[in-house]
Image (cartoon, rainbow, N blue to C red; front, side):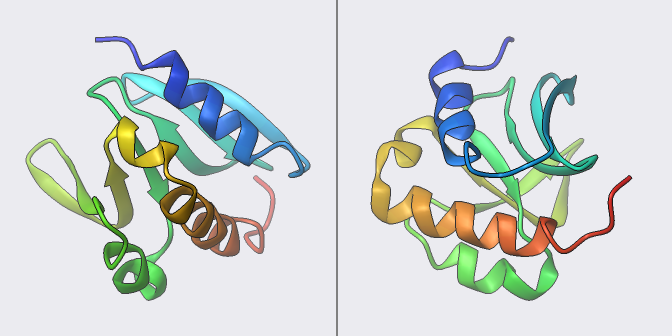
Length: 110
C-alpha cells in the first residue's frame, strides 16, 4: 500500500522552515530525514509516525490519537503513530512536530 499523499504534504508543510530535509522511500512509506536522521514518515499502512525519542515518548502519547509505533509485530520505543485524520488537527500536529524536531535537530548529521 502506498502512503497517503495528503499526509506526506502535511509533513512537508511542518518541515518547511527546517534546513537539510530530504525525502526517501523507506519502510513502505515516504520518510523525511533531517540532515540524514529519520524524523517522520508518511506510512504505507496509513497515517504517519514520528521519531520523538524515549524521553519524549510519554508527552507524545498524551496527545489524542497517539500510539506507539508497531513494526513487524513489535513496539518501537521512541516512535509514535497517528492516523491521517489526527494530523489535520493543529492541536495535535504542532506539538507532535515540535517533539519530533526537538529530538532530531540536535542529532549530528549523517
